[in-house]
Amino acid sequence: MNATKRGNNFERMVYAYLQEELGKDNLFVPQKTSKIFQKKAYFSRDRQKQYSNGYFDRNFHSRCR
Image (spheres, rainbow, N blue to C red):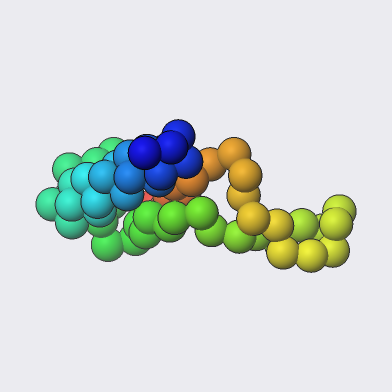
């Protein structure tokens, strides 16, 4: 198995774990207002195009009140 496949397998395991813990409300962010994304793309104003995030494979979006 090459390094990319090992990395992708590990990333899937981490994502599944974080999803499970978020579902149990065991993370530091509230479950009802949070979501986990995998390799989410963002719009870059500088480049004027969608940018696939190359540094973070997991993204948390949470709205705390």
